[in-house]
Length: 125
Image 1: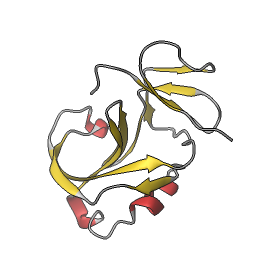
Image 2: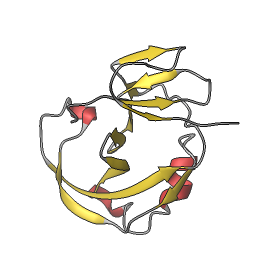
Image 3: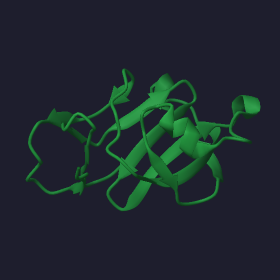
Image 4: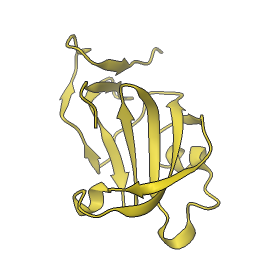
């Protein structure tokens, strides 16, 4: 969690405030002082041979991997952040404005570029 909001310009031109994209056993979060991060539960072993860039592309997020995998216990949105689970994570950078998913958590959505304090991920066409 950040003390300062992070704004991400989506591929529809809208601005999402502190968005989290998620599905069963995975999520992508953004933070003002770190690159975007994919977090995946280690259950089932799908993370072992994961091509991070292909996985994100299947979620309408174009990315370039920045780091190798790290491991930790993490909370997940699909159980309302209640239980720590073994997880793998990777930092990446957006290569295009990301899309929206049905499963998205955000603090706000705006048509205009936010003027308040925060960090914007802005994309130019």
